[in-house]
Structure formats: C-alpha cells, structure tokens
Length: 143
Image 1 (cartoon, helix red, strand yellow):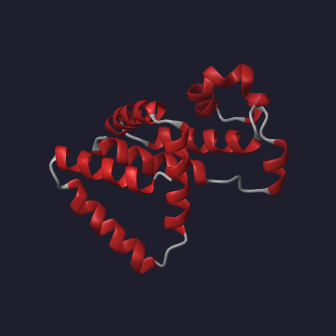
Image 2 (cartoon, one colour):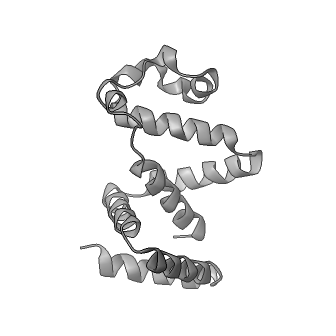
C-alpha cells in the first residue's frame, strides 16, 4: 500500500464521517433540482438515482462536490488517483479505517498531534518500508 493510499484513506474517512447540517436534511434529503449548478455538473452521473440515495449520502456527495470545486487542477488529479485506490480496498478494510478515524477524532489534542508527527515521519520513509509497516499493522489490527 502506497502513501497515496494512506492519504486517500484519511480523506475518505473524513468524507464519510461528515453528517448533514440539519435534522430535516437528514430525514428528507435534497431534491436534485435544489442542487447548485456546480454540484449538478460534478454529480451528473448520479442524477437518475439521486432520489434513491440516503439523505446522509446525498449530503456527503454535496460536500464532496463543493470541495472538488475548491481544488486546483493538481489537487483534483491527486484526488482522482487516491479515489481509484480507495475503490480497490475491501469493505472490511474500509470499515477498519472508518473505525480508526472515529477513534482518532475522540483522542485528546496532544495525542492527535503526536500521531500527526508520527505520520509525517512515516511519509519520509522509503516506499518499501512504508508498505512493510502497513502490512504488519493491518495484520496485527484486522481482527
């Protein structure tokens, strides 16, 4: 697993963890016609199934579309690559990653900062070493 995959996992976990702003939106969702033109442009492939999506998923997709529009072309390119990697990950690993992210959010700020420093050190390792450490980590924590 490459460093881009790790970054993608973090991005996906953040996107997955977001919730709608209001209780009403959570229950009823957003009508396709209520989306901004920029959101419709990005989400156009989902137009036919939009009303069948859960309100929570609609909200996540809307937030993702807004973030996409705020990205420069290089960021968009990187995100596309990361998203392709995310799609290849098994559901079990995705669930594991989501749980880890939820755990991270509940940590004290000092511990979060320490983990961020460790992550920066990890990013500076050679790719082979990163992959070895990730393999060991997932074997140890997959149960």
